[in-house]
Image (cartoon, rainbow, N blue to C red; front, side, top):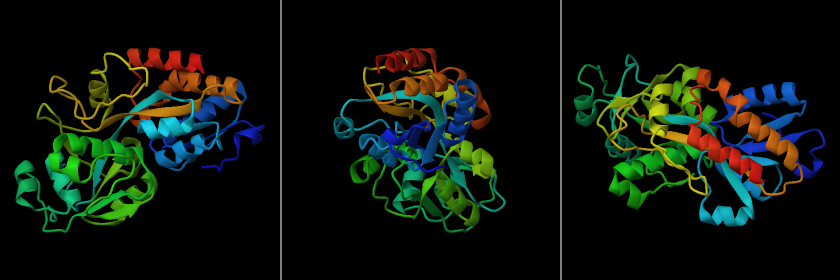
Length: 320
């Protein structure tokens, strides 16, 4: 990804930074937008936390985050608006030689990342996967070392499943994991899982597809084990009936009536300030992303924005 400069020095076009989850889709948006409007866009996939920090400092024209801003971040950003512009999921990738299909629950994932479940042939995992030939192999949990919206989605899900996780670790873009090794960005966590037999990591769905590694089916609130595919992501998002003024949306572990919902589905946001120096081009780019740009999503495991979310996003763009 290209490096970014200051908004004031953006005579060559727009600059943005943040989410690595949205980066594969962003590449298509940028290409399509440049062809349509003739306005170049440079984007740095540096993680959601850094994206929020950079738009707060106004060193870019827009930030991108898979986690909504905290009240403190929103106050520091001083007039920024977060707008949902993409919908995907955080998958669970694993590297177990000879095993391609795996069912996991939130309780087991919490146990792994607490460091309490340490072998792939643990009785709890075997009970959930009676047909799998699970080896006596050490589990290496991998987590994001940078501020990450995937970390937010993953730990938000675990906090809903495990009271111990909620009280001892909690959820945020950066948390104090109890076990495992850190890796930077989706590319870093993917590479670590690929090269480490026994590894498991939470990875954006589009990166899982590209890497060709095993994706675990995760237990949802209905008790079904589902993969992070388009149908299941859309099922999770179908539970959104209205959008609050903050545009903050949460679709992890959705109600049991969403029987096919993938439980670590997530919206991702663009963050832009009111009355930005390049307000017009920013509005054009975001409008492109939430309308014409949605057509690029399916091939990358990004589902289209639900109508109620799209309506709210358009309203927010117009308000800038």
